[in-house]
Length: 233
Ligand SMILES: [Zn+2]
Image (cartoon, rainbow, N blue to C red; front, side):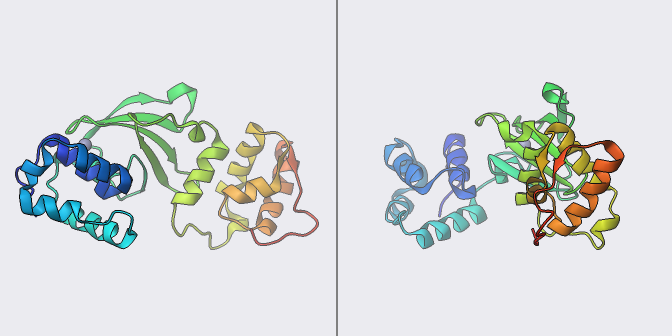
């Protein structure tokens, strides 16, 4: 497929489709509505692109993979490869040279900051969870608001969903887990233990072990709804 005559707008659109931010049906509509893409691709490639059945996920997936392999980078950075809402596990991204922090502790929330890529000028909202999951959750500032990261519980829930393979060798000896439980209880007094288990990488027995100590030492308010029949979380 010929990609060297694509306009910046088409490259942007193709990247959004390729990385999954644009649904196949929207991409198909764009292909038919674009007044330039046929000329940019050339007749033969254009026919190939419109002959794909975008309702068949295997065909769509295969075309996405082709695009990921051949599309030119719009800028000399990684932003175009990142989805509108994405995550970066610690150590995977080396953004220090290419991004500037534009806001710290956004809305007074210690884990929220904003970045701007100095190469492509993409603005990113960032929510950092370093205590348990070691992950940066990111969202393009141009996308919808991000209320999920306004609370510590919401931050942990998103981080748990995104993070892969976080587990503790001996979670009963962790100092991070009780600190997180303490903060969850402070944010939401009376929080049920089942909600704590839902956002931390521990089972109910471990959570109960820490919760009774956090209650005793910090006067935290936690509803021990899993006390009677602890189950793996
Ligand atoms: Zn960039």
